[in-house]
Image (cartoon, rainbow, N blue to C red; front, side, top):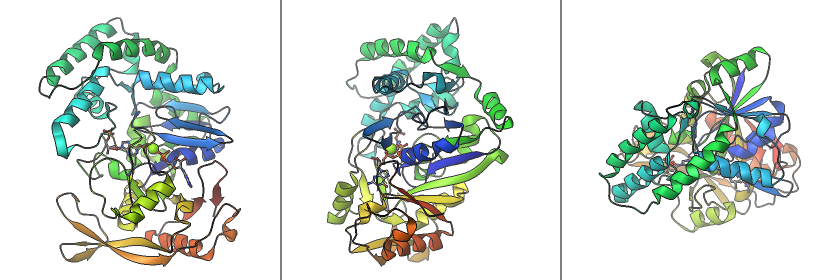
Length: 423
Ligand code: GDP
Ligand code: IMO
Ligand code: MG
């Protein structure tokens, strides 16, 4: 059996949660492989709306095992809150939730450091979600981190205090910020008890065994390809590998186990936080996209920056990820536009190119656009691909041609059912 992958092709918030929830019923396991509570994956079905940060988006499908993989960083407080919210909504899932012993823990002082380091950066700030992601991955690669499996060790408290002490001395480098460490620590240790109640696994062994048994696995990406630590718009990125390669290190599976790679792309583009965004619209059209698309962060509530679809950018993400099919989301948000622009190339220092320069912050890029006619039609009555307006079919066709990759589904609303299979 192979592991199929769902991940974002832009700067996050492409609608990954919705598509994972939709496709999950065809799998036995859904696994998060990187990121942490910086993610906010929205799922809507019937009259429910949930935003998941750490728990995989397969949790609403009965019988499916959900794994928080070793590449994920976990804040016990957020996880506890998520578990409570789902439990209060009457969802039973704890016997279907597993956590990797090797996943790293986000300490209160990681969040403290994140906030202090961002404050010190001033105008150059990354626009982090302030969930402690960067400092936690720094401790992981610096070989100082604490892992889920460590909680059971006799000297866990000692290890915790040693890391906290190190963080406190680092905090001396930064300006003072408001952070109630005592209160946060109390909550953290309380929530640790909830984390302890979740079954822990040796992720690599467990998932390879599942594959051997013939079980189907879906890996759920967080963030987006342009936020990848190596290939994104560095330094305005997150601290993990968000691309397909991250599945192998984040779950303990070999490259040849990867099957379909389903790339999720919005029919336009958004970004939350700082950093380059070549097709950004700082005008009324950008505002219209934000209002119609309800483009406000699912984790922080911040307004998302909006712009047209950027094909050089998506082409790059397809190359990095080995995307085999694309799901185009939020097509309905473009319903009222007379004209829709697509960027098909960039002008870099007077040269036309379809490639992304190594740095788009220091090197200016100017996107070239082509206008396509809008469909000026509500899509809620469309029940299959054939019933789509011709202009939308042309838009989809144009993107497929440019990207040389098939679009297998088009999402036309936030709910589970509002998805048209193109095939
Ligand atoms: P994720 O982080 O990639 O899972 O995406 P988010 O949940 O952060 O943001 C996507 C937002 O768009 C959520 O509010 C979804 O409910 C919503 N959404 C997803 N697909 C569609 C769609 O096709 N149309 C509309 N109108 N909303 C959608
Ligand atoms: P999902 O999974 C959109 C952005 C932040 C910031 C940068 C670094 O919902 O698509 P971090 O907290 O990771 O240090 O922030 O990355 N960012 C996201 N943007 N969607 C996300 O997740 C994001 N997770 C992080 O806004 O610019
Ligand atoms: Mg999101």
